[in-house]
Image (cartoon, rainbow, N blue to C red):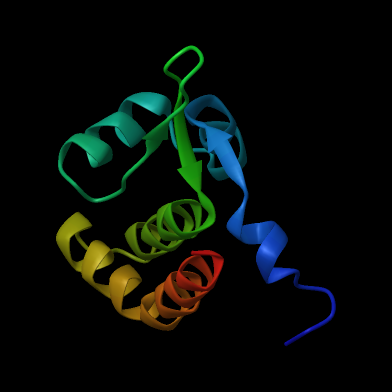
Length: 100
């Protein structure tokens, strides 16, 4: 694994919807819509109930944005992003299982 990429640190990354909106330049309303449609998922904090998005979902948002900008439909963009993220999700799943 690349020394510049700390998988364990990245697996702990959680950003609130406002931060995701800022870094992806996708407005919060659209992010909420995507979450409502099951395209992305968040977890909530015990304190304050803030929506938090993990690395995989943030990456998915950026990929979807790229595909939309290339002219793909939302449905096609989601499918392409999910295909690209298969190996990333597998690695994070393994990492989660190792913690247990």
